[in-house]
Image 1 (cartoon, rainbow, N blue to C red):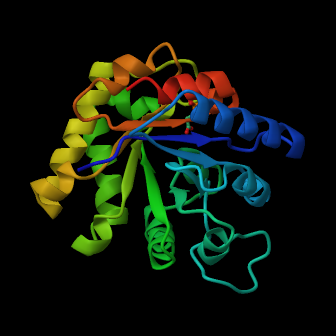
Image 2 (image 1 turned 90 degrees about the vertical axis):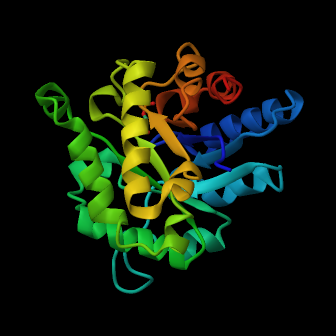
Length: 253
Ligand code: PGA
């Protein structure tokens, strides 16, 4: 059975005090409002991981993730953070291949394969991001473009490793723009991706894979998007920085 997941991606936002305040509010609302059956993942910047973990404690279904990890396990790589470090600080998830990493830090499908491998070897669940830029959507080749991202980075995985992957479809033209894909556009792509996964790993494995939608998801549109058959939750940027909005999105299933 695939999981319903809502992951918050803080990106490069919030100071120590702001991060503590946001986490405290989310944990309190999460407990008070009796949320069940949704896996929630907070992905703060690395320096927040330890204090955020302390606040989250052992709250059931509330997990921690990194926004990235190195493709190497350790060594002289100034400024990098490894998957073993994330694990040791209490993270169980890691976002890999976010479009901002692909675009601003030139992360290739090949590099992302190595990052996915690092994550899996260290017991972290990769939230693997894919998505097309506007010009590809306008050219009408978006399905092939995104399928190719999955093929190149994930299709070398064993069946056993593939079963641990979460996918996040994030059309780049919808990230941080206030322009959301319609729920039908999201469903169409998610279905195409699930069929693509089935062609490689079989229908059962594809049916068990959580595919999240990301891109200007907010409390006003989450219910509609999450109601679609192949949408299993969201990767939330801007709205994850506001506790009320983030928790309302979690409650949108
Ligand atoms: P957004 O970001 O919700 O601010 O559009 C989503 C993401 O980039 O993960």
